[in-house]
Image (cartoon, rainbow, N blue to C red; front, side, top):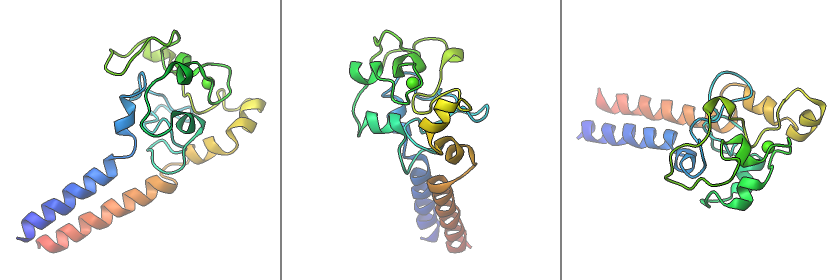
Amino acid sequence: MHGKLSCLVVFTSLVLYGQGYQPFQSKIPNGDKVPSPCDDNLWGGVGHLVPGGGGVRNSFGKAFGNGTSWTKDLCEADSDGDGKTNGEELGDPDCTWSEGDPAPGDVADLSHPGICEPTDSKECTELNDGLVLDGCSTYSGATQMRMLLSVLTLVLAFILLF
Ligand SMILES: [Ca+2]
């Protein structure tokens, strides 16, 4: 009885931790390969202020909206204001990609569509307005809260088990 309940709790915890951005990654070109301007890691939650996704959205996330698709308008827009269109940043400069197509472009040429780069330029410092600072501090905000919830759930599962 306790075993089944614990499994359910662990499963729910993992689902909660994993959700947030993954359903959206497949809706934009190279959605799971967007580099972080802060380090060598990927920025999984492309539309969010923190790399792990969840919480407040960045300019690209706001433009993307809720569950919409990769439209020509979104592709041609420059959401972060750095002079490159969202399509150029995500490897689809001609805006020909559709959900389900193979990932376009060269991974090495990708950049973040919701963060003005180079981040240390004067214009980008203003445009990003603290965004990069938030994102570059590890486990801030929503990510930290979700990790805490997962750990608490796991602890509860072990208490129930033993
Ligand atoms: Ca841009």
